[in-house]
Length: 224
Image (cartoon, rainbow, N blue to C red; front, side, top):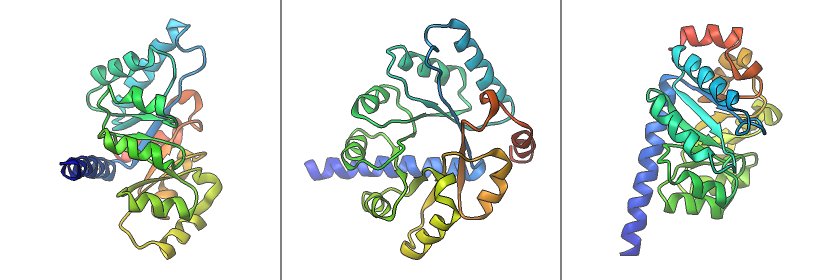
């Protein structure tokens, strides 16, 4: 009975990966929004966040990740965002501990990401039907992630690892992986990065005021 249950969970994880891959093939971009330390203290911060997401939605952005926060109000905030922006695939960023993972299980998110590879955390995510995309920065962790059945892999920090790391992956692993570049990347390099080996790109801190800059404006108009 236990083995059957595990197989069902694996099928669910695979299904979510396939769905995310298909969605990112349509628009290979994820916007990552991180909340400021005083976000839950100053009400205007929430209004600004929703205004920014509304603007992203108007531009046709399909995927947005919100950075996890330990504040008890964070879960309700994400739930409100999910209800308000149904056309956007909302995910959670920076899921790096069991507390963070446990909190997002209540939200039924289609995907979430962690900055590194932690086998125990990945196992718990799979056991709970939560797609937790691992952040990979070396070949050892990449091999372990593949063994666990991950097809969607985040390369992090992509700006420091460079394109050479992608070429190294090709030499070591011929698996059909979907690679998301994240960490220090800029919108002006979007097209170049997508032609050099990345299947999708995550942008965050490089966006001034977490809004749409000139280069992203042009890219989105051509990739809606």
